[in-house]
Length: 380
Image 1 (cartoon, rainbow, N blue to C red):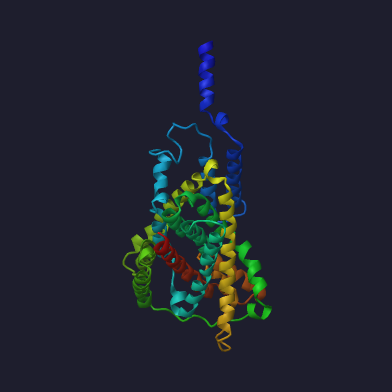
Image 2 (cartoon, rainbow, N blue to C red):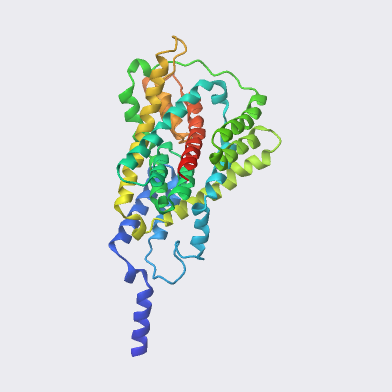
């Protein structure tokens, strides 16, 4: 009988119940909230559902020594996490993004690339704020990239500059990407007038196939020479686009934009979520990171919209830009462009802005990768 009791006591010590703390329960609740938002609200379900379930996985109380935790060397989760930790997953996602992206809107309206560049001010604004709050320069750079609204870029940069903050930075970046419509719409309405919201833009010209093929080659050479440290992201982005536009690598483009990006997105979501263990994630730094991430996103949206208003001061009638596409300068493709479209349709049901908004939106993808390269070059 005594042996049975000892065995039961030993078994109890290995259970999650015996090792559970209130911090674990808080994190599990956060994971459930993410899953609920993804399923019920349909806010970026491909991101929030894997991240939410990953948060639950990472916060099941585990007795040390079982070699199953994501931070225990050699465990299955730890091996999968190396794709995040070592920065393998983000370039693969950029390959898929490039294979899915049509740069025609940007090629036909090259002036709109300036909007994507202006929105990246949010990254450097948050960087300065983070320095003010006492973060080290490398940590501040990793936090600032949240303003680019690009989860893979945030993971890539934080893996190089501040791996200890990666969980908080990644969850913050993906959370705000999911909240694009809620965060951006009030800012857009605040900064624009009714007259500005109904500005009609000229229909973009038709882009030839030759231009579509040349663009990723020239675009990569130009950006990579300017920011060589951004080569892993920029190279895979433009390579993926070349696969799509060349017309002779359809199978590769289909694989990159479908099965490959789906698998990598699933792995990155689950492992990033699992990395938010209560003892690592619940800290004052994490709270500051979430606050700075929101500020960087707000600053980026402000700068994008205000920059269009500034451009319009120098543009003649008939060539003015609707400032509602300024929010699309962030890298959340295509959600930010859809916000431009929906807010524009509220002002004028016959004025479609989606095609125009895609230009600064895809420019924002390039811009965030360039910004990451700049920060990595200075702080890495």
